[in-house]
Length: 92
Image 1 (cartoon, rainbow, N blue to C red):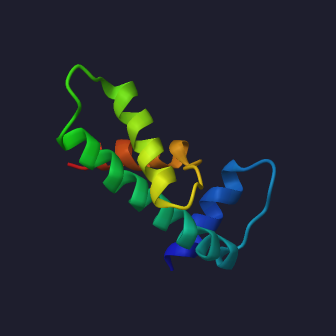
Image 2 (cartoon, helix red, strand yellow):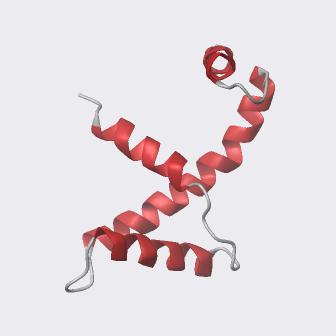
């Protein structure tokens, strides 16, 4: 089962917390939803970037758009989003 492999990998690399596979699955739902929303917003900014803007500006614009679309809640999962972006880019 996928989450059992995640449990083993996580617990081998985490020195702070032990998590079982059910905790991994439960945590993944909200993390996945938020990360996918932010990715969609970022890609929308990336497709039609404001003139003279760069990657940092796109990230700021995506943060503002995410916060305005989510009742003022800021996106705080940038490391997870970056890991997903980099892992997708590495897929052959």
